[in-house]
Image (tube, rainbow, N blue to C red; front, side, top):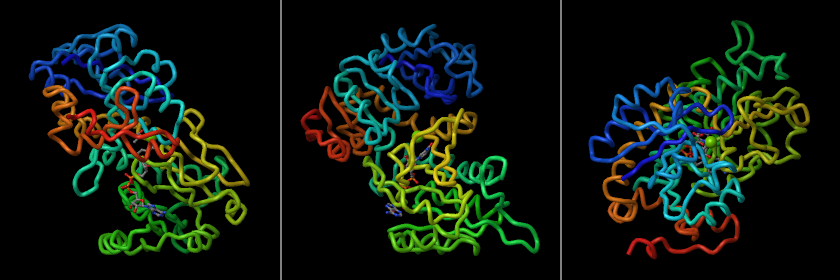
Length: 371
Ligand SMILES: NC(=O)C1=CN([C@@H]2O[C@H](COP(=O)(O)OP(=O)(O)OC[C@H]3O[C@@H](n4cnc5c(N)ncnc54)[C@H](O)[C@@H]3O)[C@@H](O)[C@H]2O)C=CC1
Ligand SMILES: CC(=O)C(=O)O
Ligand SMILES: [Mg+2]
């Protein structure tokens, strides 16, 4: 198969979808890998390293899209890329369709095959291609939150861990999945007073077992959220309903009940956010203020730590990319239920129910394309 790896063009997105080591694994199996020149630079991989691994370099994004049967990317295609995507081309990347209708419409029009990292799902319901980036974003959410709690950055001016004789900050985490667990570990390690909320009682039981003593669990419901937001300094949004728009757990009217300088980090922004006032921001301009509450809503948090993130992401994606390249997407998805669940849009038809429902679009049973 011919595989193309374009350079990411989203703001401050320095990750790349394939390392030289990954390119070598595909090439070894008889595939051809084209990488857009300088695509790996932000993650510390030089063109010469890809060439040594056997990849061919292309000077432009247009040529990279034009030649490839499978495009491997990190972030969702953005406007200038829409017209480069071709009928029947397999695009393997994060899409987060439910958060952005124009992307959904553009991919329907492209008639490409869109296989979304974030909905590839294992039998135990875990999301193997989201997990590594959720680990990164969860850990980062605390270091970013701690920074924006500083007064010059418009926060309350409270030190996360406190000092002897002064209480630490209070951190509230909405959603105790991968992002939430990693955030809790970091915040607890820094000495904060941490509460994790989730709707799943088994999950709360598990977290109660494994977390240190400065982490408490609490059932997630509107009543409890309204109570806790009045006393917490850093609130991290980390809920997920796979494929769907995140529920608005913090509504506009709740902001007035928070203390001035409270910091909200809505990691779930890529699924539309779990805070009503969440709007996607960039690493260049990560925050905005509403009602004296600082909002941090960067949709590609791991892009800021590309050395860690590219390696973590490609460790997870490569085994799936090899299956797709060896067998073609149809056979690979027929034989691997996990990959099959990654199919979101095929040849103009939405095959992932939650995406179709979000935009009131008709949904087609994926089996139509796999028989
Ligand atoms: N902004 C960024 O750069 C990044 C964003 N993300 C996003 O972070 C979000 C969370 O991802 P993961 O932790 O991997 O998901 P996950 O599936 O591991 O965890 C989600 C948790 O939310 C819980 N939940 C669902 N509804 C809830 C509610 N009403 N109240 C409280 N908890 C609720 C679930 O029970 C589950 O435990 C996703 O939207 C993901 O795409 C992930 C990586 C990077
Ligand atoms: C998961 C995701 O959206 C990211 O890594 O940017
Ligand atoms: Mg994202």
